[in-house]
Length: 160
Image (tube, rainbow, N blue to C red):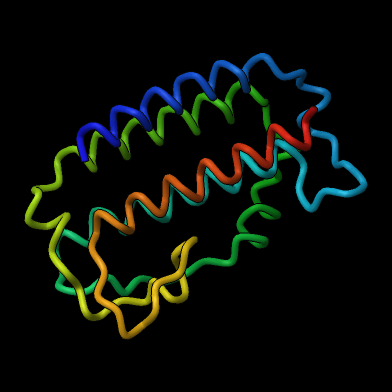
């Protein structure tokens, strides 16, 4: 897991540098063919960080991986990411994920690898797991970062 987290930290750092190079006027503009603007996609990733940070903490105190979901569209809408300063968003995203990486690096291996039979990753994970399959917190953490990378690729594709 340490190697994975080190790679994620490098990815976050290099991505933040690329994001900061984007023109403020471009990131706040909605494209005709995109659901969210670049700023809204990054805002969604901040919301995902917020929700998953909480889940990764709570997972250490319970025997299951059952967590509330959240309405990503409503979260994005009420926070008006289009109206927020781009540099502020990028730095928040970067630093929140650095903290999540730190947190995940503190989780004991036995908790990361513990198989959980009770979960709702069939509903809340990016790459859903069948309800009847056991799952680990390590899987859930890696799924979070997979989701993050997916949206970063999407963000750069609509901004080019």
